[in-house]
Image (cartoon, rainbow, N blue to C red; front, side, top):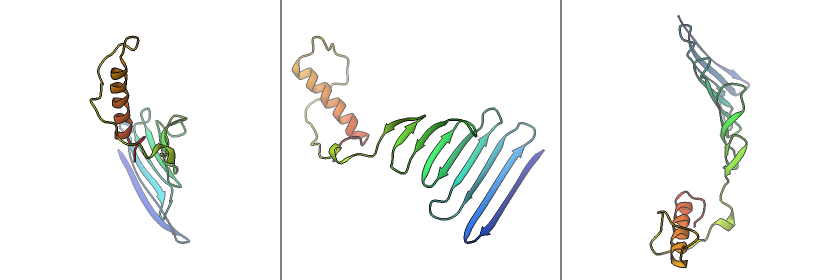
Length: 141
């Protein structure tokens, strides 16, 4: 048996909506709820009972949970921070991260022995790290 339903209503200029689908045979669920307008909250729930996950948007912050009511797995907040669990992994680039002039030369991404590396080998490794950080938008213009 499959249950599904939807509604849409106007509450003083804010549209509220919901759609849900549930399979009684395997417990599979897909549900969307939310409100319209700038910064409107929204929620998407997907999966089987034991393996369900939830995507949530509240006031422009986006979060992923491995199941409703569980601890947050990942989020992107309004300050453009990427958060894994409760740890901020990446932040919006601050002014002091801009203005790097790209290095030149041959980057070294291969193995090397830090105990015996020459100045040139160390500089090549540093260039490889700089290029990786710039490629991912962590440093650069």
